[in-house]
Amino acid sequence: MSPLLACLAVALYTPTHSDALSELAAKQNIRVEIRNAAFTDQAKGYVISGGAVSEANMEKYKSLWVREWSRYSKDLLRQAKVDVVIFAEKLSVDGQIRAAVPAFDLQAMYYDPELGSKYPDYQRSVIHHEFFHTLDERMGRLKRDPEWTALNTPGFKYGDGGEKMRTNGVGNLSDKFPGFLTQYGTASLAEDKAELYAHLLVDPSEVASRSKTDPVLAKKVDLLKKRLQEYSSNFSPDFWSSSK
Image (cartoon, rainbow, N blue to C red; front, side, top):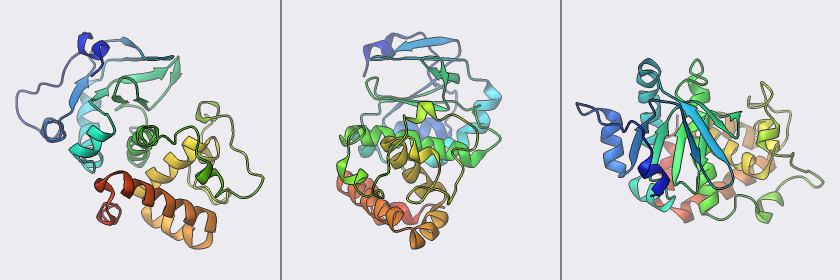
């Protein structure tokens, strides 16, 4: 675990009684931190900032997060090098607001319980989308993936990255972008894969329906599932069939 995280003055999650969050953390052998003050964490080449989590927001978010995160096994999280999950509000990376941050070098995942709280399906999607970036990094295909890009229609080019595509609505499901579920997926190779993965978990029926008429999307689904099953036994066929 990063020495930086070990020495930060933060509130560790130490409830006075057992609850679902602490039980899941113990089962998965991870730490959970709930930040209680403004902070700045220095990573390699970027800065993660945020503030305290309100008790009300954390209480509301906790059950949703536990339900989604419980899909992952202790072995998978160890393989993905996720040691700690940090909850904080007003998360940002180099000043840009984020709903979540996968901090590969800190072996950490950051989540904001407040951002998007009126839209639970959005928050569910964020949980898995950002975790997939970590999986993609650990599999060595985050930034370069010729096999995946070859599936796109000839001549297609990704955008300049998710940080450059921040307008409202780009994450909505849409059939206007063949081979992609959302406009945000066209922003970059990494966002394409993460969007597909998240929606396979949050909107499986929509992905299945679209795949029937979109051969590029269907090939991406097959490749993604194949890779993940090869990477970890967590991603057995039962993993996908349990999605709702």
